Length: 263
Ligand SMILES: Cc1cc2nc3c(=O)[nH]c(=O)nc-3n(C[C@H](O)[C@H](O)[C@H](O)COP(=O)(O)O)c2cc1C
Ligand code: SF4
Image (cartoon, rainbow, N blue to C red; front, side, top):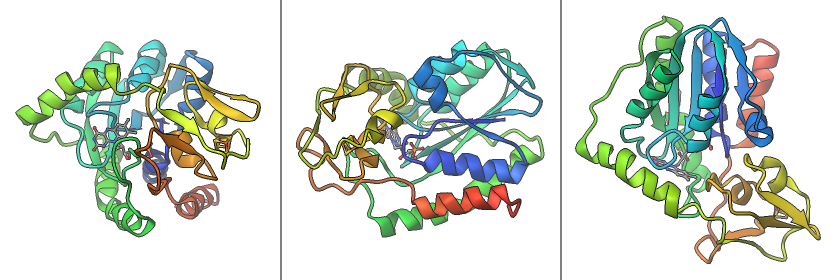
């Protein structure tokens, strides 16, 4: 079973492509995150966890959810991470998570996708994003092939920089860089409520048809990137920045091909 978390669609796409190649099902973790649902999940096939990289590790909210959710059946666990440039030493933390759940760690592979980290950096244009997505086809098929054959995903060399990023910078990022205080809404907001719906931690509510953020935030950027009128800003940094979400036509085609068995 493929369990995925995805704020802006990259990891959902990866999860769907792998599901198709290994003939397995995809399950989004977002409804469980939103409702704090920790009921058991069962799978006869290996567990494949697909997530974005947040500060060189699996997102904290996903690690916490998996720690709290009994997983029954198959005892093998694979990890696939999408990122913009790298995931540091995330594999060590993934291995610990798998072992804590009594699973056999089957490795972690990661590959580049377009950046959604709009609160810190520029995001790619649609044309740049398209090229990056196209280039993800070969790492994705290598990963799927490994899983299909029941092999471990190949380990890569971990540098001192990778260790520092995942072990030292990650906790600092989670403690000091994920405040929701900078988020605000402009008069472009039409009160559609999509930001409330998409946010994985239920920390946005509509008050007088305008979103208000409470403290609990992971900076997943779902709200700011998905807002249909680009009404959400983070401080002054995001003004004029391109909003990135995985291209809807490509995602729709993947879903349709899966539902009619073309893939
Ligand atoms: C809070 C946050 C932290 C991120 N940290 C990293 C990182 O450490 N390394 C990296 O290469 N990309 C990083 N990114 C980029 C995302 O991992 C990348 O765009 C990912 O594919 C988004 O996946 P999604 O569309 O499934 O949510 C970060 C993005 C966010 C929002
Ligand atoms: S998604 Fe955008 S337009 Fe819709 S309620 Fe949220 S901020 Fe307003």
